[in-house]
Length: 388
Image (cartoon, rainbow, N blue to C red; front, side):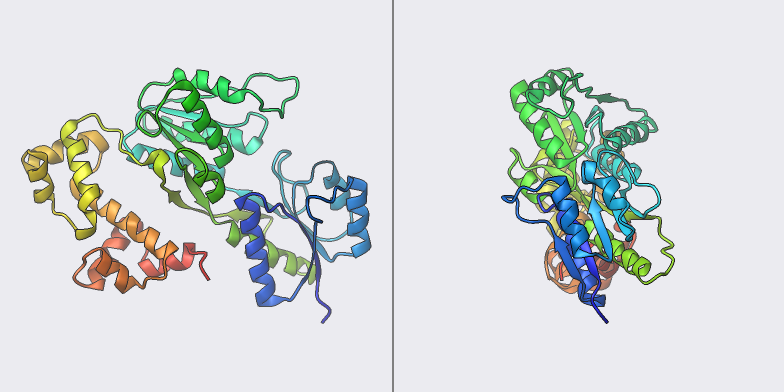
C-alpha cells in the first residue's frame, strides 16, 4: 500500500514535543512506514500563508499538531483527520485532543512535597494558560484536604501579556513573603527556572529555604538551572504513540473510541532543588541523614535509633510526628525510590538491582518493591521505561 502522508507540526525545543515525536516514530516503525512532513529549519522563516500552502500542496492524509496560533482554524478545515494538542486556547472541538492530567500532576506534586515534610507551600504559574490555572487549583485543593494552604503567585497586569521581562524581580518579592522553609510547585520547568532565578534575587537558598518542583522533566532546562531542578516526568512518548495509533484508525475509516489521548503521569525525578527533608526535630534529622547515607545496605530501625541517640520507641514517636511515617516505611521508600531509578535509567536486571540493594534473594526484593510501589519491578519497568 502507498504510505500514509502525515504532517507533524510539533516543536523539538522542549521535552513534551520531543517525547511526542519519539512515540509517533515508534508507531510508524511498527505499523508503517509513514511519510512525514516536517517544518523547515528555524533559519527559514515562512509566513502562515506560506506554511499552509506548502501543507496543502503536499496533500496529507492526516495531521498531528501542537497549537499553531492563527493557523489552527485553516488546518482544522483542510478536511483531513487531525490530532490536536492545545496549549493556550484549550482543546479543539470535533477532533481527538492530547491532554495532560492536570489533577493527577498536581496531586502527585502535593504528595511528594508533603512526604518531604513541608508545611508551607506556594504555586507559580501563568494566569493566561488554562492548564496552568488548573494545576494551581488542583494543587491547592489537594493540600487543603490535608489542612494546608497555598500561596499563589499572581502575575501583574501587563499591556503586553506575553512579555515576561522583569518578572523574576516581581516573583522575588512574592518569594520574600513566603515562610521558611517553603516548597514551591511551578507549572512547568521553564517557570521553575524563573522561580530559581527569583530565589537568588530574593536571597533565599534552594532547597534549604525554598524547595522547587517543576513539570515535564526537560533535562536541559532542569540541568542548566542552579541548582538543578526536580521535575514531574510525563510519559509523552506513550501519548505520541497513542496519538499515532488513533490517527491511523481514523485514516483507515474506523472509529477512534478515543476523544482524549491522555499523557500519563510517571513520577518525580528528584534533583538538588528538592533534595532535603523539611524537619525541625534534630533527632529525626539525624536519623534521616543516617538513612540516606546507609540505605543501600538495608539499615535496621535499631541501628538507626542507636545512631540518633534515643530508644527505638522514642524515635518512632518523633518520626511519626515529624513526617507521618514510621522509620521502616521511610527506609523502604528511599530504597524502592532508588530501585525505581535503576529500573528506568539502567539496563541492570531485577536480580542485579536486588543485589545492589543488599537483598539476600530476588523474591524478597520483589515483595518489598510491590509493597512500596504497588506493582512488580518488571511491571514498573515495562510501564514507565522509555529505554529501547
